[in-house]
Length: 244
Image 1 (tube, one colour):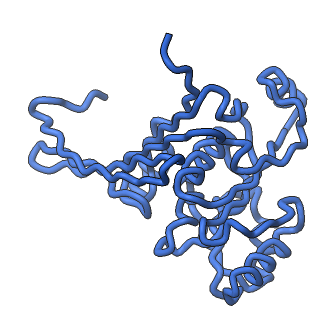
Image 2: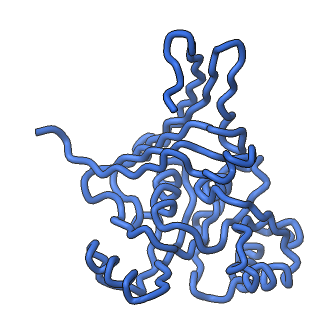
């Protein structure tokens, strides 16, 4: 009988990051009113994102990557040589990386963690101006939820590898398989987003355990008020042990 909501979550966004002791692994949870999140199938999604400072920029997300980066540079009055594009380090992105490098823009390659990479575009001291590339579609919904709260823009399009993935998407209510989704298509209405740092990163500090005390840093955001609340917590592991 309570309020009906959509929930999107990733208990560990950055499994490989955590295993390798890298940066920007998060535990993420987002909520919206029922129907607020795209019911995205667990397949790949093409994504282009940039921060709140430039969210008035309109692009054609299906135009060539070098044209998109050039348009971004022209719009922001940023020297293209100082523009940093974050991309997942994957073989599938070789052509994308080549095209962007041809413009003179700088590239930041990451091993995993594209939710935090998209969020980073809206933090001026992150060193990331744009995010481009193919990653998981559930992560695209989570990233859009965060941008709804802090500002920024994301364009996305589902990427299908075979007919089975198309059938799965159709079964989940996806009617237009070629649709380009914007931020509000992925996450609409009143949205809340929360994340806890697992490893140190751009947005949050990771878990630190010392003398049987675990310290964590979390953030809670809301689209309605644009409020960001940071929570620094200490957990006494003698009383509340970590459950494996």
